[in-house]
Image 1 (spheres, one colour):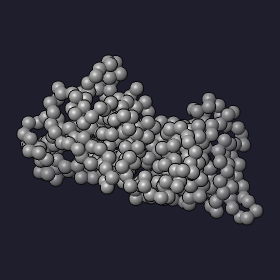
Image 2 (cartoon, rainbow over the protein chains, first blue to last red):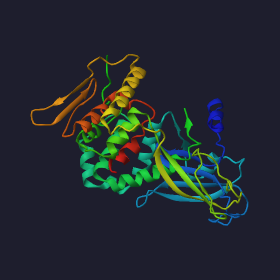
Image 3 (cartoon, one colour):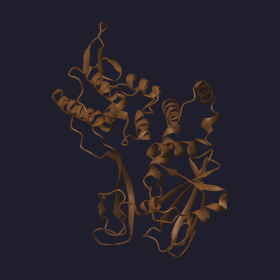
Image 4 (cartoon, chains in turn orange, brown):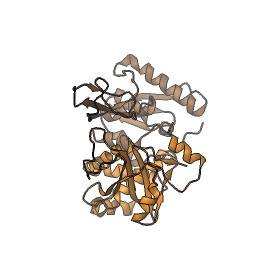
Length: 177
Length: 178
């Protein structure tokens, strides 16, 4: 049982506790904008190999989608375990944390996060295919796009799945509704 | 008995069509594993110790590793990730193993609808052109040269099997290219 998820089910709080191997998802004006990953320092190092920080605090790293890569790292910093992740993330803009009721909503969010700046959106065959599609509700619309991408652009889909697999393993922050 | 449609279980028609056209291979097998036997793909991490070179794989993927299990050194590295299915799926490559697949399908049908399928719910045969055809009640009609592959696809292309929380659509589409 994940205690942080169980805590949030019972309390309506406006802060997010940092934990080890946690993922928190944020929207900016209803668009998937940032993924916040928290982790503890690797036990093999006395200081953080990335920034040279000596105290064993919680590492906070923020990712946003990128046009030429799957995602880019916006920041790497250390916060106290008693800190508030929501307060740290508000420095990047008007963000709202996202809660997922099921895995399908998580898949939909991650796909839109990956696709937002990806060059695939400007491919002619993609644009033509999107114009021919009828509107359908989520997550069927997302699964349609993923199927088309897996069939016609397998390398792009493999990039998405590589990102998906790395992120799904750390899911302590999935704030289920 | 009312069976759901593909749009009701959020499966794209493009994917259904691709499964019908796909040949024998890992993709069909992985669908049988996930949809019939509910075997999920899980990541298995391999760790090694930088001090005594002891290697091990923790049983739980979310287990926190702080030190080596042998020498308790904190110098540990995560060096390999493998994706396996969480359950042992019975071998169905031999003809006699079809009983396992049929039994599992009937269990799934009872779990989902609360009733057993009809007596003649499997329609199997040969077309005039030499293709084998198969259709499970409530599912798609499938044609293929090989009767074995045709039957596997027919078992997989039942919409109600896709209506569960075990399905990982991203992984299914990744297997599509393997």
